Image (cartoon, rainbow, N blue to C red; front, side, top):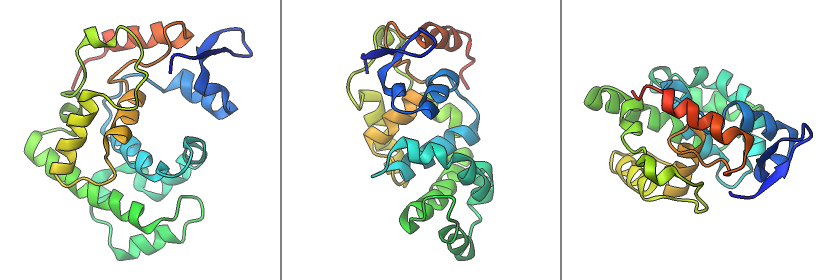
Length: 201
């Protein structure tokens, strides 16, 4: 995570975004910026599940297709999906057609509704697991953290699927619960400022 590269514009960025042009825009415009929109939070958890065994590039290229197929990740709508919807999704060549992962999204949407009823907000629940700011002084090099382990454990306890500690940590990185841009990455200070200005749900 600490490795960097010099992008075509001459700026230093996290090395991982050099893998493909699509990653550069994702790195600059999304990754690490704090997010409280429940659809985007649910989307990211869902797409991380679909990514299992695949590359993020594959998922990112299909993200708009996933949004169309899954009602823009409105979990209230997805929670009402039936077997007919599962068959519709299995027939959709624009997404990853994996029955277990599709059914997990529907299942997790139902768990999200339970969380709203119990906690009031999925976003507020997730952001409880934001690490102490002192722990964010430098980027993580591990693929999990104590907080991702704790959040994963609690989600599993509540019946969520495809939410292992590594998946949850990738979610936390992307949604801005941590700032894991490399220390000298051009985006790190921008994300720091965004996190400071962000109103926690």
